[in-house]
Image (cartoon, rainbow, N blue to C red; front, side, top):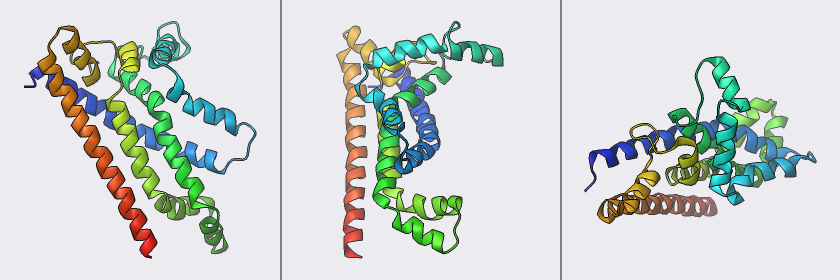
Length: 228
């Protein structure tokens, strides 16, 4: 059975994942919109930077985040100047690391949704007098709703399953930075396989159910559109 420490890590993990997903959608939406419509020569560079966490070892990203956000880093000096201390080994550091590591899982589905939408709906809205913001909020966002669903689900579940980045940036501090993936590692290291099974199995079932709901939702939307 899950003990109190396990429940604490679950609660902390879902807090981090929820806040990170919200920030990812807020930051990723304008970025995906810009990338979907941009023809700049820098588009490939920006796309590569956004997708970098897909191929970069998590420990590498975690190490450089630790350096940047530490007392001697650029970000660390700025947060010290603001009077909020440094971000490593804190809840805020976990959120920042999670946002950066899960960024491509949110930006890419949104970008694909905006591209698939095409220019015709926006041009039609423009001929009716809709301005850029009106076209974005009244036309683009509703049409990209499936992309938002996919982005939100992937961003949340990917954040829940992080290990290397959160361990490097957050460490293994009980009730502060110890998330589920790190707690599973602790149980395995202590040969507590029964406790590890409860957490790992729970995450396995959770991830499967979330993806099942996502794919069923996408299939239903596709069927509905084909019947129109």
